[in-house]
Amino acid sequence: MRLLALLAVFALSWTGTAQARYFDDVIASGVIYIGAYKDFPPYSFLDEQGEPAGVDIEIGRRIAKAFDLKMEVHWITPDENLEDDLRNNVWKGHYLDKDDENPLAMKHLADVMMRVPYDREYAFKRDAEGLLINDQVVLFGPYQRERWQVAFDSEKLKRVATVAVFQYHPVGVEIDSLPDFYLTSAFGGRMRKNTIHYFNNSEAFAAMLAGKVDAVMGMRGEVDWQIGRHANPRYQLAENGFPSMGKQQWDIGMAVSQRYRQLGNEVDVVVEKLIRQGEIEKIYADYKLRYELPGLYQDVAQ
Image (tube, rainbow, N blue to C red; front, top):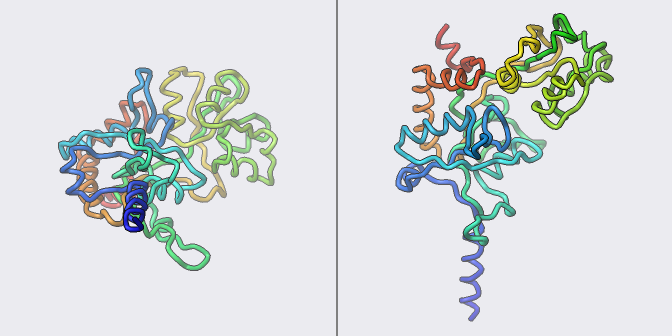
């Protein structure tokens, strides 16, 4: 009787553990799970027909096609920080994230997670005790360089030569983002009262369309997306810099579980081919986004 009870406990503990997969297992299954952030246009979202869309989704589809696999999207809801997202979706799973068909089991983890900073300093970041924070994941496959961008209403502002104009004009930002911290602290906090907070960049841009703010600041891809969608020459892109902001550009890549490096290596080869053939740049153009090569490929080109 005691043995049966122990076996039952073991079975429950096993089904309650999320599993990522080895490369051979992914191929054998016929399916690859691509992790992408939920409601995050233009990178990953549901279109008007309820179908997955966005830059990261399209790259995921091409990765799947290269291996003759079906792509399934593993939707990621952001947690408090990136370490939580990696733990919940790549190498461990979250105990509340249950499988719809088997409530005793967690949902399948992402085989590959998109839109992760490709940054050596972050990859080897250590905690207060000197232990590696990201030792359970491998960051690889840079496919895009991202930057910050300002868009403005040209009927309210002739130009944005410097962010100092936001001492006199309201600007919309995503709350708790780097632009939020920057605009509320730079120049002795003189732009703080004109920095208006929104849940995301889409809401900030909508506020500009409604005349509630004169400009928005966010990630270049998100700003380009909104400019392309509305296609109104009244709303223009600024060409200013951001003095004393710190990191103003960064590369975007992918992540796999540390146990499944071979999968990462195989995907890396596919992504490099897509970059060199101009396929990823074409995906960005289809979404009316500017594309910039990640530093790895810029260095090679030079």
